[in-house]
Picture 1 (cartoon, one colour):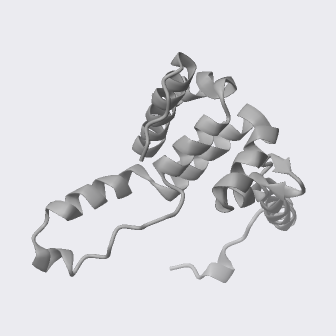
Picture 2 (tube, one colour):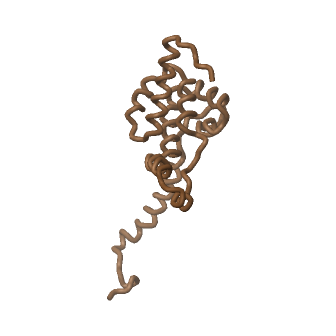
Picture 3 (spheres, one colour):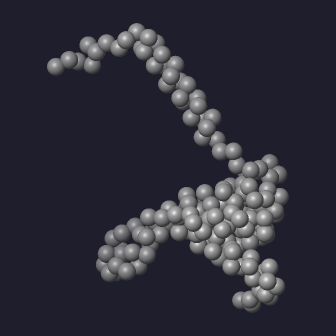
Length: 162
């Protein structure tokens, strides 16, 4: 059996390998920085975490280019398997439910996303129609709710009272 130190690497590869590794590390730092839309010096993700009014103000300024970031946030906070897990967990006996970890709860859900999308107005309608086909159920639900509300606004139907 050969030992690891007995293995010889071709000289050009041995010289190029550290440079390649260093390049990959540097590139990963450069590409990991997202190129989110920015408003007032803050990235969109900060505005999505802020209250409803600051977020809507930022989204009005950023415009439809914010929609893919809203969808990405929903996908990250609500992966499809997690929704299935939460539904399945509700059907299990109490003895088993107490053993399993609870489903993750986040403040950025379909309802918040739908309200923010509605606040952006008609320019986001094409993106909402496209979002209906998204494989993530949270994105599809947010788009469906936003489209329904926007269609009512366009038709002149007064808002429902709580």
